[in-house]
Amino acid sequence: MPLKLNLGCGERRLPGYINVDKYGAPDLRHDLESFPWPWEKNSVGEIRLVHALEHMGRTADIFCGIICELYRICVPDAMVHIVVPHPRHDDFITDPTHVRPLTAESFEMFSKAKNREWISQGYANTPLGLYLDVDFETVDVRYTLDAIWLSKEDRAQLTGKALYHTSMKHNNVIKEITVILKAIKP
Image 1 (cartoon, rainbow, N blue to C red):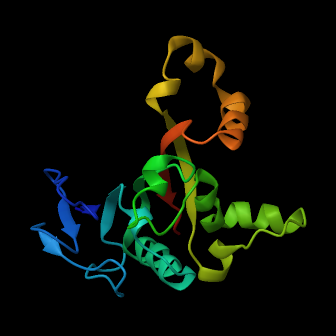
Image 2: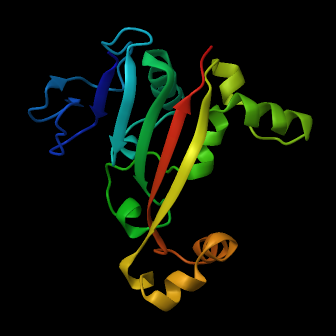
């Protein structure tokens, strides 16, 4: 049976998961910026990174190493649940331990299908999935609005493109981003 990991768990321990953090008293203490990780290749079926990934990967090499380790330990079709603060929200900006701004589009960099599409269309996006030989498909993206935007009227107006455009013009519209990735493996 594949493992379930709650990485960078802090004080948010989940039953049925191996809770992992560099600090505190998790099930396993491990620095997730140190490689290789202590799990076998193709051994993990579900990973949760809830308000954890933005604390890791200050440099591109370390961040890409984290993505490579996620991919290495995932079984085919493993699900990776990621929640991060929106990079244009005060929750991200005010915490000095937040070192990696991430958007939903950040994870498309690690999709071989997206990488091939960009190459065929002449886009300048870096095809990291192809370069690193990792492949994650984004299966769901959800945005949590900040409380000041939660009125029924604002919610009705802020969908699809309107939400995107508003969040590009104003800070503190989107509080956090939830991205669910699937490991694509043969």
